[in-house]
Amino acid sequence: MEGTEGRRGTEGLLYRVVGAALHVHSRLGPGLLESVYERCLAVELAAMGIRVNRQVAVPLTWREVKLAEAFRADLVVEDRLLLEIKAVEAIAPIHKAQVLTYLRLSGLHRGLLLNFNVVHLRDGMARVTNFAALAHDARRAGEEDTE
Image 1 (cartoon, one colour):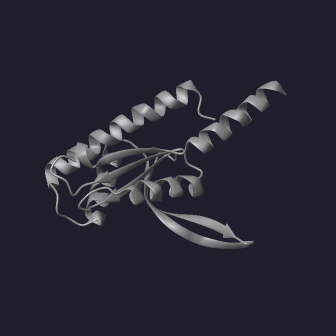
Image 2 (spheres, one colour):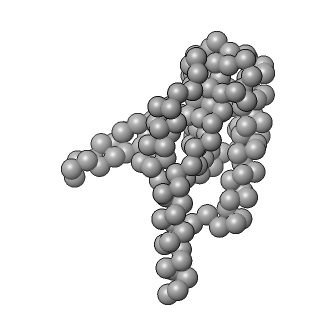
């Protein structure tokens, strides 16, 4: 479970990631491929001393058949924050639903959707939280505390 310290740590991490994304966007501007923003953001985060993995394969088991790669997460930061990079005209509800699905399948709780194809990056950001996973972890931690 993410305790108070974990939440504060995640918020601090989120703040640093957003700062890095703003820096990348201000230097590059809109109009490039998603893969360019993804690579540049990964380099920027690593330069800040933040552990980041690109194109993380996430498995899925369906009817007892394990699919080694159900999808690839664009970036996973510090093993706790999923970043989905877009370069689209506008963030649509399906993009947020996609991130929520990725969070659910990966077991992560927090995600950030970043659309770099905007004039101001603040208009292309959306936080996504898997509240069901957070509630499950809180219940499980409560059960462990009573044992």
